[in-house]
Image (cartoon, rainbow, N blue to C red):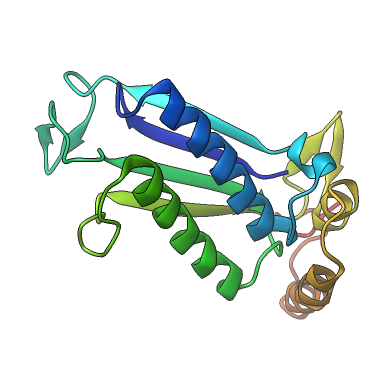
Length: 180
């Protein structure tokens, strides 16, 4: 159930490029979150393009940026549950998003050429994701999206370690991250 919000300057790409980005980015965020791309998970994967007027609202270095470098500036905010991906998967997602943008927009994706494109991963802790009026966590989301079984081997021990940390340091029962 990943969410990807792509913040960009208005007219940064054509409708064809936007459609290709949405398709390719959906695949990338699903593999990053659940380890695979499947029809059930696709029905719960959101890519939202948020246009910003560069003449009034896009500042870089304290100055308005009416013109962007070739390929534009982008902020990719990825949201998925805490424990969905280890650092290797996150690093791969950073690379995949960069490679997708470079390919679709036909720009040089090497660093520092795309240093204005940021990929920010926001992990929602247990107890902070709501669906259909219910609080859900990584176990629920993994089951609903038919995630790869090997991901369980990562997030189960992580959640056990987190619970141990909370218990050891006397976090209150309703503390953020404790889950439902």
